[in-house]
Length: 171
Image (tube, rainbow, N blue to C red; front, side, top):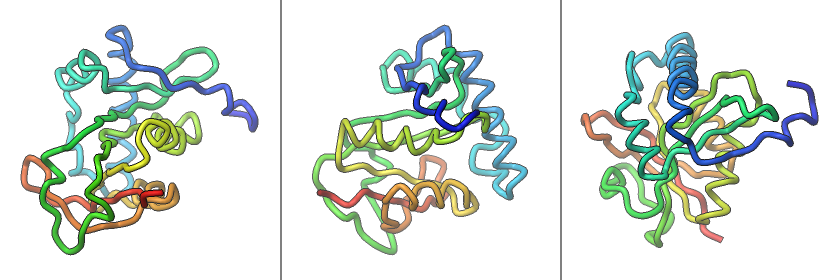
């Protein structure tokens, strides 16, 4: 994408008609992770179509689109407590104030700035954010830390595998 065109990107709630585009975005993200030493974080089928449909139905999945409306990125934003973050090891949260969580960030790699826009969108709705990523997901670690999140410790996701946990410093 040409410099300056990124400003016409738009984040909007995902709709049922976006499912095929979302599946393509997540397939691209899984392929990228696999090529960059992180084949196990999402495996071959995460997130499932059923999970994406539930996220859409519950109004917590968002898409990042270009000026033509084509979907190039996606993420889930969940305001409120997340049981995954109830226990943290090797550190502590920066704040126990109410927070929002960013999950399932993905990009097809064809439009720059997806995570930056995702973080700004979520910060506009909640100053206190949490996010996590796999130890082998070095790209996401750089993006998260570059967006001002601080590494807080390790949490464990539903299948018991560890994730590096981050939080935004409270204003």
